[in-house]
Image (cartoon, rainbow, N blue to C red):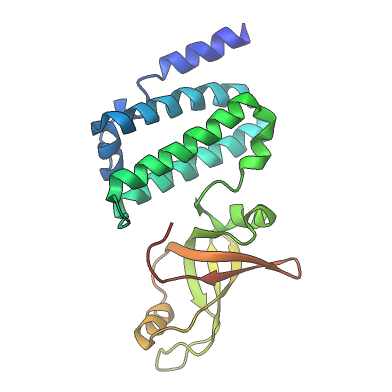
Length: 214
């Protein structure tokens, strides 16, 4: 009975993501290009099955992963690598489909997929710091420098990346004067490209501003 119910849920969602309107810029590309649309449909079906199989904390963890996947998919709208938005989406959807296929074969392996997301929130990164060791990812929040001079210039190479009550230590690379002043002006929360390191079991991030690498 549970298998029948789960399959019914998957079939009911077969129209999936592209049936919802309006579409964002990235999703409009997905839904207008048949190869990408086909990938998204397979993702929708597998996600529906797994969502129905998980319970409790596992279901919440899976839902977090779905949210981070959607964020990464939307970030492709700013892609400037070779192939542009379409190639970024092909890679992003392909990675997600591969993750879901592995989970379909072994649902208990969910804990092993926690570091497969390139866009995460600070609290999530803090929880799974060991899994992200050495990785470069995008983390959302506000950067608060440890010290700014009275005339608004950056006066320290340390900062905190803060969002919704979670604060992570952030090391700043050498910056141009205008970059330092921008940080001291407390820019709005946004995505920051950082490298993740554990030093003496403490999580430290290093801002990697160059390029738009994923």
